[in-house]
Image (tube, rainbow, N blue to C red):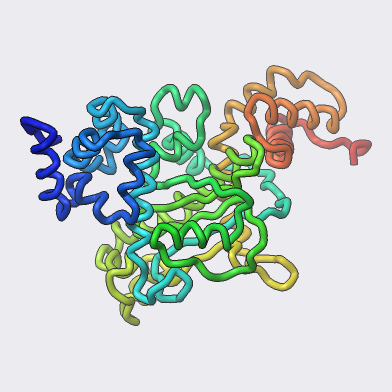
Length: 368
């Protein structure tokens, strides 16, 4: 933070810092509609200037830096975190793309992943250690109160550069209307049917849109699922670029168009340089490519691990499942996962079936 003798001095300093992204004055200057954030934070003009002269939270120390700024301003740290995440995402996406929109092949490095309104088969697998580590890291990044409350949206806000936006009756049209209102190019591709969730990620930041009419358990799962897409399908490839081909970062962030040499280098680094979409486009029968199905399953397994950690599920079910017919035990297990882990019915049933298999409880001939 910047020391100053008076709030009047801070106003002038904030103006001088508008070109410096190292301070929130410069960071927020790149955000369309940033002035509207003042009312969401409940700040008067003097407090707003105090915010602007604070240093931008460091990516690797985001939670600690935001907590320090919130304490300095006397405001809720989680509210500040969510507002800053949204501001960063809006600024990144509002920068546009080389083609002038987010719908063209020139929107290099953009990921768009949607979860439609149709019922989907949840994977009946325990997941992998990699997914468990990612889920644990998400919770570790959140303050203790958020972890104790199992507040998934808070954990996402604290752990990743992602904003969660709730829209009534989410569809591609309503998401595009929100993007329009914030100076962000529209997202193209796919029919405009109802969606439960939609992720748009670019330049290291993401926005998760979620249908505001969903019940609490389904909303938690959708947010966790889309966060899985951000980590697995966007952030991991971006980190591969930084590690293996840092010269391509300017390409995938849209600062220059890719050359044929860039595309060849991206292929070697396992980082495709085109527009990446999941479930924005389906075939005439509503199906998707196998690679999309695999990405959806992995995002769902991450969501299951975040909401109902595998070892915790096994411990709980070992304590209560003592015997009985398979169908009865499956029903008891699914009910526990719905009530105690707040999973929606479908994912609860899939997680329960995988757990019973691990515990050696299988369908008998008479259960088939």
